[in-house]
Amino acid sequence: MQAVIDSHAVTEFLRSIAGSAWFTIAAGIAGLFGLLFSILAWMQAKSASAAAESARKAITIRTLADEFQLACERMDQLLDFIEHDRFAEAALRARELASALGEIPYRREPLLAQDNVDELLNKRTQIEIIGKVLMSTNRGEPLSPEAKKRLFARGQDTTAALRKNLGIIKGEIDRGAKQ
Image (tube, rainbow, N blue to C red; front, top):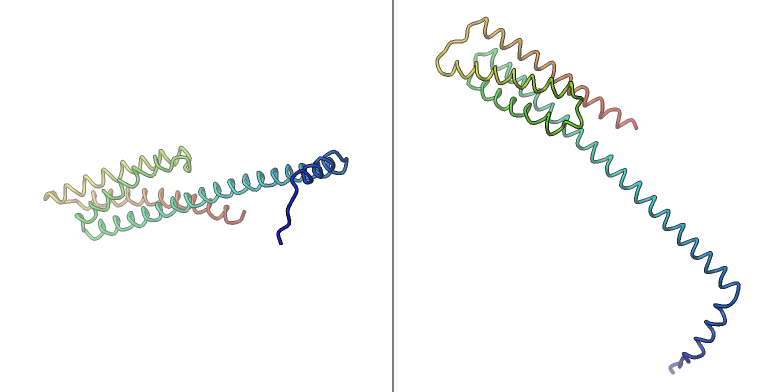
């Protein structure tokens, strides 16, 4: 059996409840709960947004550390190639390293102090000079022991600068991990 609902009776029932003080109080409380839940949801969303931004920054800093680590490894290889008179390979490493050092300061500038950006660009120029000298040896021009020593010294200076920047970035990662 189906129960037939009289729409007129339902309407009358709702009108009688809507006019009571209890209904007004209950509706007010429900409205306050709705407002409270809306505020809590907004706070949760804001907190989630801040957490996502913090995670994005942490990932970017770790990526920068990886880029510096790779640059340090390339610089170590460059010095090893120079030390063992493997100038063609050293010239290739110099080009790769100059390219990386030309890109990092501009792409990651918000994460680097201006002094570090300037230092990296200066080191890139030094690496380009080393690369040109190494390319000249590939064209048959001999590299004197004094020139080799100068190249090696410039390379060690660049290695120190790269390792300093890597240490700064890794320190930032460590501080972030402690928070």
